[in-house]
Length: 195
Image (tube, rainbow, N blue to C red; front, top):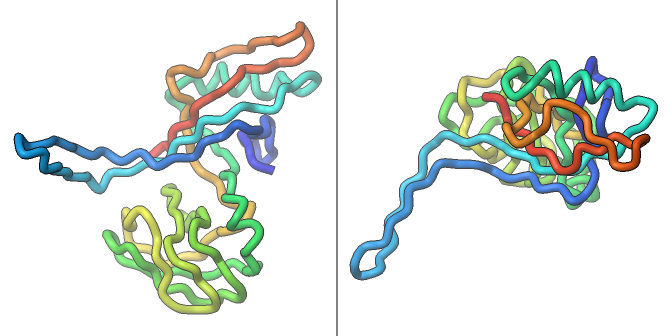
């Protein structure tokens, strides 16, 4: 189950519609001859816009989280994996990855089964969320996006156990909203990866 975590427990489940997108700073301009010039920075973060399952008896956990975290304190979410990834993956063990800062590939060992491209992964003792850009079956070299922010020599999660550190976007209310006096429904929220 994907959603906002508190103490490892999902307190607010993500529901459709949901968007997961990569935010990367890019500078674009057109010349007089309409030739497009583009430059992108290496900085990147993930952002999620989603609705939350309306809550009733257990709405107090989310209410406390929204108020106490505000828009500055980080919290953890369980990252939603792509449906195509879920259908294709066969890997069940936790493999090891080794890579150098700035690299777009890691060397994977102790992997059994398929980790499809498009899988969100997170390395142990590393806060950044990455996405695989190549299929990985068995051991070998796996492509990742964005490039590594630091050297890696760690186990990594790749199934429905991948967490991401976030902050609430400034558009998210720091309180509660009820749709019928019983169900707490804050509507669509935006979550920003905390780098």
